[in-house]
Image (cartoon, rainbow, N blue to C red):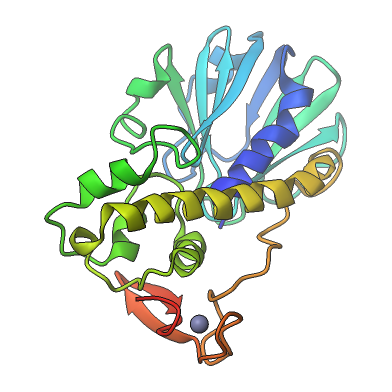
Length: 271
Ligand SMILES: [Zn+2]
C-alpha cells in the first residue's frame, strides 16, 4: 500500500512533466473506485492548465485553472507517464492527455483509490478538513504530541497512527520510529513525558525523511516505467523481524497485535 513517502515520491516524479501543461482530455474508463469518479470530471479538466501539485497526508492535490483535483492511490494505485498511443493496460482506469504529447495513466488493480473534485478550497474538503498536521512540517513536534496525548490511555503506537493526531505515520513507520525513540509501543500515550515525545517526533521525521530520500532514486520510473516508487528500501530494525535478533542489543524481537495492526519491538531497547 502506498504510504506517505511513496505518495510524496509520486508527487515529485510526476510534477516536472505536468506543471504548466494543459490537459487536452481526461478519459475515465472505469469510474468505480473507492468512490465513484464524478461524472463531470472530464468536462471540468478539459482545457485546464496544471498550476501546482501538492500533497496533504496521502492525497495528491492537482491544482488547475479550473479547480483542484484530489487523487488518492488507495491500496494499489500508481501514476505513470506513457507516450500517446501506447496500449492501455487492464487496470489503467483513468488517463489525462497532456499538451506535451504524453499521457498520465492511473493504474489501480484493487480500485480502492480516489479521483475526486475538491473545487476552489481543497483544504475544506470533507476528506481533508479534520486531518492532523503533516509530520515533516514545523507544526508537528513533541509539544503537539504531548498536548494531544494528555489523559489518553490508548497505546502510543495506535495514538501516532491516528490521522487526527498526525498524518502519514503508517504501520511500518510507527514501529520503526518507536524503536528509534526507545519507546515501547504498548505504553499508554498519556503516560509519556514531554522529553520522550520530543525524541519521538524527531524520530518520526527521520524515518519518513529517509524513506522519501530512498524514493528519490526512483523518480525516473514515472516516465515509461511502472510508476511504482521504491517501496521502503531502507533497512528495517524491527518491522517484520519477529524472532530475529535486535540489531542493537541482540535480544529477540517480539510481535504483538495492537489496534488490529502487527507491532514489532525489542523489550530491552524499548520501555
Ligand atoms: Zn534491543
